Image 1 (cartoon, helix red, strand yellow):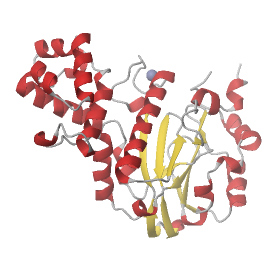
Image 2: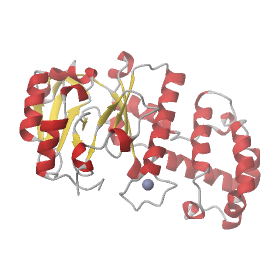
Image 3: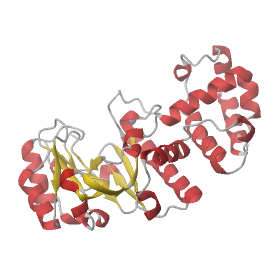
Length: 319
Ligand SMILES: [Zn+2]
């Protein structure tokens, strides 16, 4: 009964009986007046934008009254949000959507999600957070379950003023979206380590189909995908060494393989969300009506389970 679109009556019940202001994180309530709010009334996209909301009570009244198909708030802060003017900064956001993962170990059709790919999306966003903490000493990281994936919202003072170009560079870094210089590939720390971590994650999801069009000879792909070879390659990569991988793929094949990995890495996160400093993002606490799941601000990310913590009551009561 899950993942079916919510009816207008179910939306009304959700906001009237289940939703509460407590579902909206503090970091949004504290900055309500500086954010632009957007609403999607009929499932056709957030066409009702440029809304300024002054108080939590006003937000509460509005959501209960209009029971929107979807509700959004800007990740940016403005002095005049009702005109999207006077930009003061923006959260740094990373968005992983389980339905858009380039490789998944489940057999979901395009556009669908299941417990397996949702778990893979969560593991991935945790990996992004780890790099932000370890390599950039960022501390104010907030996780949100978006309904079909995860948002990571960074609120450290030093990222708020970043422009699109800086955000794009940071995105490339955490995702492994650039091939490190060859002479640095095997360095233990810094960016080469991140690239290897992302590669290691993809290794177990590779199949012959992934290599189509890569230009790597089938024979080479076959040798790499032998379970024993894959295991040994993974062990070596964990030690920082590419020797066996190079040997298996040949020098030209290895270059093409790095390019393939770079491309898959870059597809893991929705770049538009990170780079756009005027974006609106699904409001935590609101209903994702397309799939009938709650967008949830996550307090304990390790223990969070969308099927336990993001299913609205009306779904459980559907016959
Ligand atoms: Zn799936």
